[in-house]
Length: 252
Image (tube, rainbow, N blue to C red; front, side):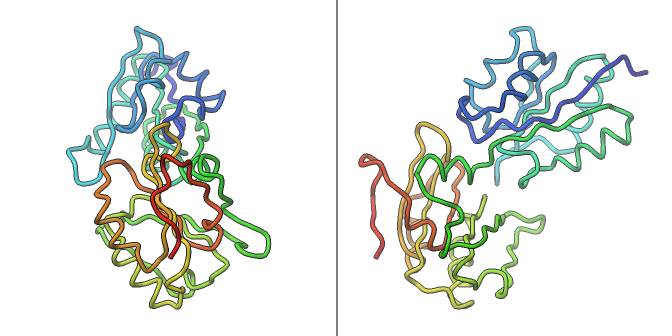
């Protein structure tokens, strides 16, 4: 039996508490149960009430993770106790998250819910390293892609990636850098196409590298980053400004 429980599916942004929306901050402050992703920072978790139930349900690629069906069941179980449940998701819930699976499960179980947008990693990286995602006369569109599909493959259609005026932003794709490089070069992208690689975008300890497409795979292997890596490919990323302490390479 339902007792006025409610679920808020909220975007936590890429990690820095300054990038939370006001709506998500208010939701956190009123949360009675918090189910959060693995990459949500301690600073953000600290904004929830001290007596709030806090459970990590995050997923990291190739690491031990909480199954999605368990997360779904937890949301329903806690909401049926009459709690305000905040499902705190990294970035924006609608960008490469499982928000629709979770909303559908809540609908099927009669649990009322709402979704709050969050800052996605590409937007945070563009602000942090001062580059545009689109730019008049050079980058007419931007496409977000993921390298983590259900079967582990990545599908790059030549017609969609060959346009030199399209900015490409790859999420969760560093493990597929060699395949991405080969497909883009095969589709006609110039080896000199600007690339920016950003680890932990939006966080104070973010690291970035500027390079060219010809060096993409070798650079990813050499860096061996542990945090989430965003890959920006296209002319717009030539404008990325590297703080002196982070500048490690120039375009070839």
